[in-house]
Image (cartoon, rainbow, N blue to C red):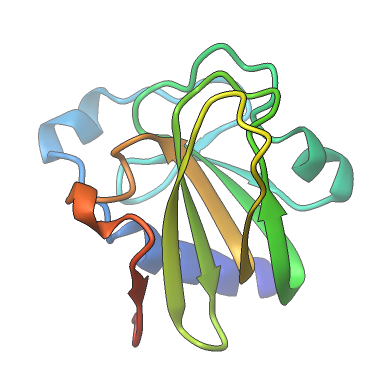
Length: 143
């Protein structure tokens, strides 16, 4: 039941970023990712081992693919890019406050990026925001 609720939240959250409908038809998910109704390939990381590895040591992330980091409770979450070579958008979602913060993940950076969240989404740079000025902007009353 909790997984279904999270899926609904994630579908709502991911609808903030759009992909042209003709791309939905041609997108094929790589192993370990599942296609959702919006045409994104998602990989859900629910345990410490999966979350610690994330996208470290990956050489690329295909267009339309997203990694979802999920925790049981909202708390201060810190991400870093030390062993990640892919420029990423990192989206922090706090369902209790209905807030989203999107940050740029810089390849191989040791800088910690921290925000309160229960769910964090990583995708290729530019796939989670439509406007480059949206980075770091806190959006309230997310539905």
